[in-house]
Length: 256
Image (cartoon, rainbow, N blue to C red):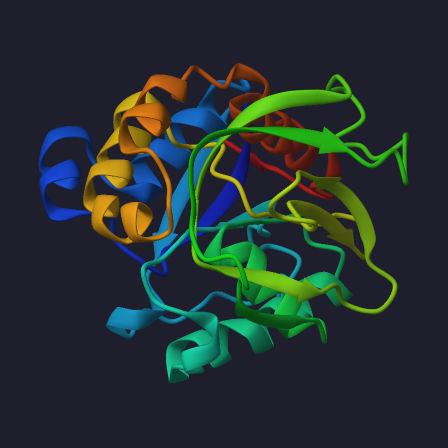
């Protein structure tokens, strides 16, 4: 039996009442990854708590290599340059150089861009929260993660900061009216997505409620945002697709 080793780098926690009811970011991500049908060994590493990130490359032939890594969202801000965040950014640079499959989600998307020389800052229009349509750029119709998707599809979003400038050489993959950089690829197999493929309807509505004051001050209709929440199967499918690609790319798998 071949098993692919995947790492979830946990850089944040969801809202306490959401976690109590539905689990946390890493649980939702792991659930999506397992829909690939591949045999996965999923580890969670939390650098905020002092967890040590594993080597990007196996140090000896007998070591079981990483097949890929997913970086979670966070309520922190990349621009705060926390020590655990900057350390993870350095690790990500090594991962991209080693062609390790990477998927950064929301904060992870922004951190990947920052690590590779892009610019992250507050979005000039404020918050984007709810379900929104995402459009492919078609800048790379052969992209192994995104090319299987239709030209546009709905996704769950919740963010205040954005990738204002992509890293040099990055491939721009997706956008919408509010957010020009909803997805990109850097290197051969490192992707950042500003939207949340792991969020479901309940998680999205919880964030609309949590941020309702700020959204109302921004001129948003809370009723309209809640009415607009819908399932996002195409966005959610990216987690299973990523697990499939990581499994195919792993140079050596563990047999047990």
